[in-house]
Figure 1 (cartoon, one colour):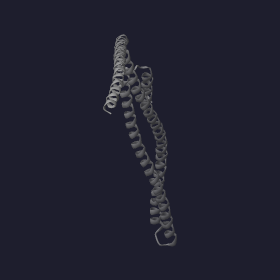
Figure 2 (tube, one colour):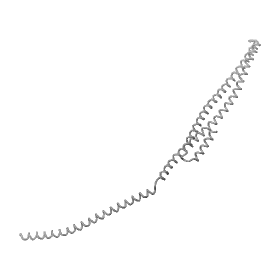
Figure 3 (cartoon, rainbow, N blue to C red):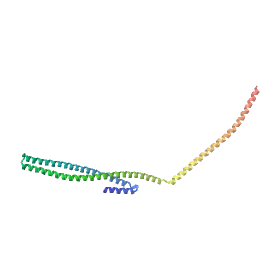
Figure 4 (cartoon, rainbow, N blue to C red):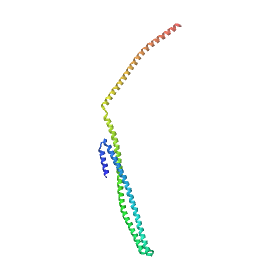
Length: 235
């Protein structure tokens, strides 16, 4: 029970401790569970030994009971031989008495073995209850430990993330973004300016080509008229 109380105290301490101090309680709980498993092994070993003693007592009871019955039968046979004249009465009485003494000894062994068996069976019952309780506690603490380890991982990851977020300088970040925004706007304005210049150059070229195109058409007409006049003269 002291072990259970110690583990229960550890559980309360773990529930109230901060994340940075969880590692030691986890290790202590793991050690506590290992100790409980050793206790369970010892209880199982003791249970097997006590059960063996109970079985031996039960076997001894049966054996001594059979011997007691056998000695009683032998005493009766001796007396029957005496009555039938096959043995002298004094000798038959002596041997029958010895057989009955052996019977009484066997019955004493039966009584002692019966008391031992009762005691051993009581011990078996107590050990079985303790083993059941111990197994239940080990299973419960194993599950608690798994949950605790998972919580430690989540808490540690959350702590690291929050730590990283806290270390970010929002002022520098905003300033950097503003500079990037200003540079992008400048590049966009410069792009628009080049577009305007390109459009202006294109418009000027169109005017020039249009003007040149008009004179060329006029000259072509004059040349055609001159060619026609020349052909007429040749006829």
